[in-house]
Image (cartoon, rainbow, N blue to C red; front, side, top):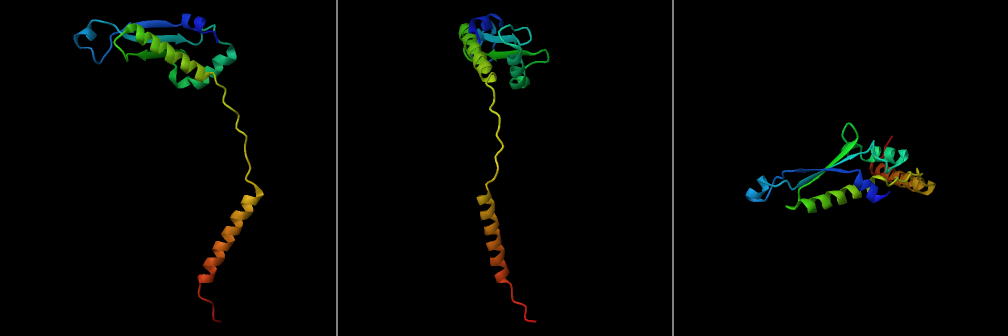
Length: 134
């Protein structure tokens, strides 16, 4: 994954941020919105795109675009850096191939111990009953 090519495929949009800032917040667009189109990206192979579609599926729009926002600071440049960092972390996480689960089997010793304890418990309860005097 080439980070420079990936960042060049991103589009940014500056928006007016909500939150702290007083009168300043009404005049300055410090919130950054990042848009990334997964379908038109040339940074990833088809297999990687499929993997990202699976892992990031709930975060993508209907046309397979990833949209991230950041308005944590009052600086547009800092917000841009933060949203790029968040995007790169998300992509790295999304490209991790999950390990295949190996089905395990309960060992015969454990099964035998469980049956033995059940048998002892039932014996204990059977001994509490009043004997039949026929």
